[in-house]
Length: 318
Image 1 (cartoon, rainbow, N blue to C red):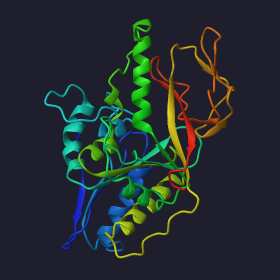
Image 2: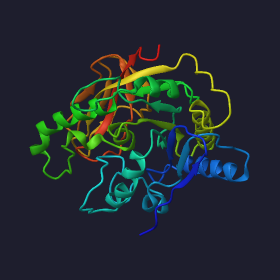
Image 3: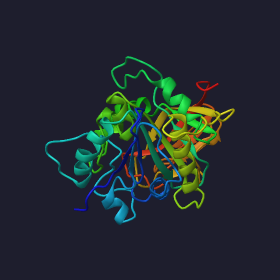
Image 4: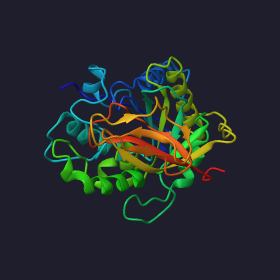
């Protein structure tokens, strides 16, 4: 088993504790490249930590990274928790990573996506005391999100995932051959775990996996985060004007290997109510239930797993 690696820097002066992750999914390497660049800059003295503590994890999932695929044995960014009885590789990663996340106040998790599209940031919930994801730091996340240099923000992840699990339970008996995720907390990844430990966290999707600009998007976001949190002596970046905010509100699962999209959807493609998004293997049309946006379409989804999400416009950052 490959060793896990984190590089930490501590200023003599007090300040926030920030952790930045790359390659939670092994084929998403833009964060790794950006973090390596920041390590080089700090070691060379061209980027100076003036307060607080910074932990950089270039490769959160070494096995998946070494094999240049999304996962090792399973998705590290689902049902993330430490366990006394690790069964797969990602369980061992979680046993190392979860205490590290819990020791920090702020997380920036750097990702990329497989289809063409523009970068965006994923926010946590608004402040709430509900049972699924109680939270009190929405304002802190929002203030950072609008300074990362992207023009779109998305929220609603865990609520929508949990609602999808509830629907999945209804047809579980009809798909005995499928490996179904029936735990409503299966949607917990690095950001959700950090929030559950009292921190704030953002996921930045920096562009398509192999987009040559994605590492620069990630690096710019790291420097902006350091400046905003006052970990470096630099002006607070101005908020990006007019950030579009969307809320995930529905997830549709793939129910048969021959379920097919009506077209090659890209994330955030608009879709009008009643328009065909896909067709089930038996010919039933899956139509948009409202005017909105297709998000995270996955033509290669496994049976019983997320096929696509739907989102609505939100005024949260207005």
